[in-house]
Amino acid sequence: MIDLHTHSNISDGLLTPTELVEQAANSGVRVLALTDHDDIGGLAEAGQVAAQHGIRLINGVEISVTWKKRTLHIVGLNINPHDEALKAGLSAVRLSRLERARQMAFGLEKSGIQGSFEAASVLAQQSILTRMHFARFLVEQGYAKDPKAVFKKYLVKGKPGYVNHEWMSLESALGLIINSGGVAVLAHPGRYEIKRTNMLLLLEEFRALGGAAIEVVTGSHTAAQYVEYARYAQLFGLKASQGSDYHGKGISFMGLGRLPELPANCIPVWQDWPEMDSLLAA
Ligand code: AMP
Ligand code: MN
Ligand code: MN
Ligand code: MN
Image 1: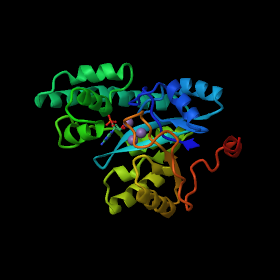
Image 2: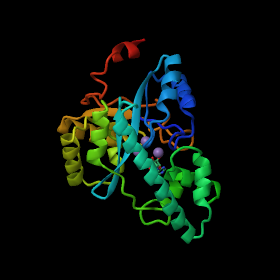
Image 3: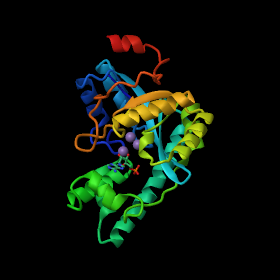
């Protein structure tokens, strides 16, 4: 019933914000956060459609961050989409994505793949350019059977389409989210391949900067990782969030709203949000 991490075609999802909300409604979701990468342009439309379906739309975003040379994702929930500093910060990230995409295409060209920038731009339409758009092009061209395989072969560190990009700092991302009235959530921590010592450092710093929660249940985690990250949350006094990270049929590990419950030792990130009880009971 609660899905706090989803994407529309404002970033790298396949559905429009309207289609996403409609699908969420049909799947029984009552509280939905739209969390496009580095973009909040879908929130107004999603909010309108959500209201028509009696769904609570949580204004969200997923900000790309560089921390100790690693890329992390920070989800902001209940952010203010009219906040000027947030809007300016995100627009700078989007601009830097364009340059990164040109460099990605250059790398792919050197390994004999022509025209990926143009093709990815067509797939992205007006939205930001992400590795997912390159992945879709490469799959269409038959370079691999699905996005997962294409990432492994072309789009991760050490591969021709990978660019070591400098994203926003952790401090800036948390500052923008929190100053706009939102709460910051460390997205899918199990995906970062960070050893325990560094994970402890990261969580320490995240909490010190005002971070509120970590994603425990996500499409990127195994069942064992739900338990592992519930423990980390408890250890640091952080709340727990849950979200499918839905991108659309065929490119998601988990369906919209098809979420297992948070482990019992978790304090849900929505614990003190208004009207949640009546929303979920209705
Ligand atoms: P970007 O922010 O441009 O680096 O694009 C990252 C996006 O690509 C993520 O948000 C995921 O949607 C997708 N992605 C990253 N790694 C993988 C993978 N191994 N398999 C499938 N999709 C991936
Ligand atoms: Mn994505
Ligand atoms: Mn992510
Ligand atoms: Mn995501």
